Length: 352
Image (cartoon, rainbow, N blue to C red):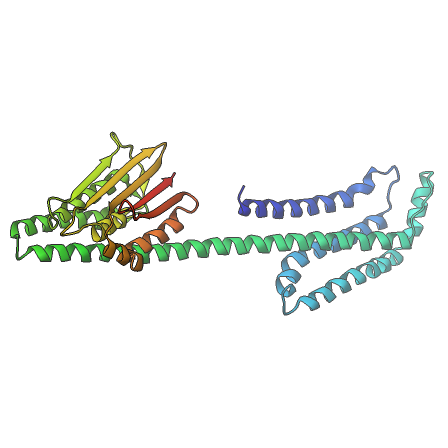
């Protein structure tokens, strides 16, 4: 059960108990064998009207207006005065209607002894007033927590939505900047390859513009997009560079946040490829029980390794932030650098 539902149930329960207590307290005298005089019910109506006003007046007026740092002491004084004045006022009502004389007549007629006194009734009134003001205070606090929780959740949703839009806007230009730089380099050396790359890029842009507008996209589309990116990047690297994509056969489709995996692949191409030394990139993708495992391993070179430590890239930093916002407590990300094996690796696991 969420904190929101717990607060809602607490608020409902306290108000419900208070209303039931008022109802039972008012009609409880009907269980007696004595027929109560009219003045008793007049007193009863006034008394329980005061308890009702006390409870809901504090709940919806006094507490919201005065129970704060500025007026907290004033609120305490007013509540104490109210609890002090109520029994005095009700005592004057009892005297005005000659309640005890009428009650004694009713009890005598029923063959019973009337034992109540003004002191006893005053004690009961004070006790009941304190109980209702306490219940009202607890309910008011619970309602305030409820409102604060709703406001916080609304604010958090708006903040996350705005931040995700900002992060996604950063990732996409970052990707296109790198890709356009590659095509620019091909214009003077291999125009057919450059034209093919422009076509591939337009296909990828279509995915980014139309298939990533929602909060989720399909994993298979995301993988196709990554494979298009790899094909585009192969144009500018040596054929001797090993690029292995190991996809699970009959890969189950699942929903995933758009453009979430690409920054890790970008990072491998940026830092794991050497023009003079053997290098490789390995990408593994599998889904087991709706749990995604995405792995990228690439060559690690001394100069590139230092550069990686100093500047992990806009895309990686933003992707980590997106993961924190969209998959809280549902993902694990391991980033490792093996100096002996000369390998940099990331392993991302996302549970549904």
